[in-house]
Length: 453
Ligand code: GUN
Ligand code: ZN
Image (cartoon, rainbow, N blue to C red; front, side, top):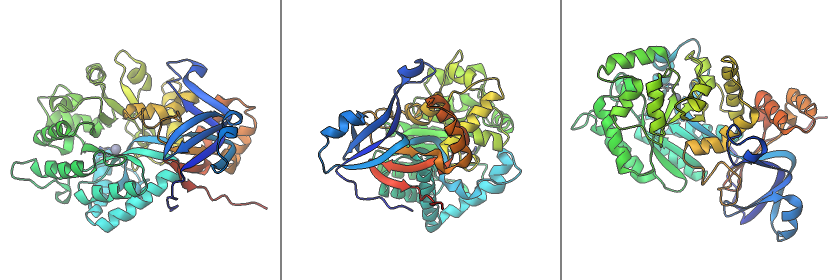
């Protein structure tokens, strides 16, 4: 682990700077981003104070300002992951099961181990190191049903000063006894009370946000889903995160379990859980009525392509969901451990392939927009993170493809075409392409490059 260095009062980061101002699919071409071939980002007290050409900014800086020279490398806002499970790092790449069997065979036994706070603390440290190695600086994270798993998580993210959204998984049926919220005095109460304690302590503390986290409809009673709504009402600005219509077997089981609901989305809708801070993982198997409700309520779907492929869940129809008759807000997500990589570059590469299989295209500019400003917008955090505009919090990733031979060779053929270059980086890159990661202006990860010769 690279320990957080003491934040310098002022620092300048020099490189090839790329920062989006809008969705390249909506605002055509160069109107959607700023690019500085020899640019500088100036950071003071964790916040970006200037952005522009090196030859305009550097002469104005006092001589004692530290300059991190990444000339030739791409400098971007830190990547954002809209759906991931920190408790599943150790079951990534578990063989041969689709959603329900995968949960029973691998996920629940692993999550039961989080009853031990020491185990959870080790996993949290691994998780944050892995995010930083991959250039991810913010994520919406599922903990486990154990209250201590959330305490451990937020304590670790606070130590690293990272902007994190997380919450205690709530389950009160259809899971092993050891993972169920114990019945309180009135049914769903125990999960409610633990979540309330956690939200009171951690929501909006430093850079932390609380997410009310019912696992999915199958593992909650209606009473528990209603308790989730009460939590949302009690904590303004809190998130709701869960799973929705990921796998056909899951959808059928939900319809059987909630006979009064019109469809899967309606289960959450009836509990009052749809809204602009609600993040629904997957949303693959939805009908038009469901998309309409998600659109009307400004709810968000987290598209997790590597997970969808690995679990065999289906192909997310990006065009229909994002650009269709009822446009829904969509973020990009790794969904580790059903997802197979922490890297948002690999995630974008898989998104591209999922769309290719449906005759759709994901441009590299749109993919990089999604990983940064797009995902910040999906989380309603675009005024804080996701860009390098002055006023933003200085979470930054520096990319360098030269350590990956196939990418290095491909980049040499790009001839200065930015879109082609970043397409090669997302297609061939991974953690090896991350040269440095900054959290609130402090260096939190730097790649140890092998010197050759
Ligand atoms: N649905 C309910 N729980 C989970 C989970 O942990 N991972 C995924 N991918 N889907 C889920
Ligand atoms: Zn998930």
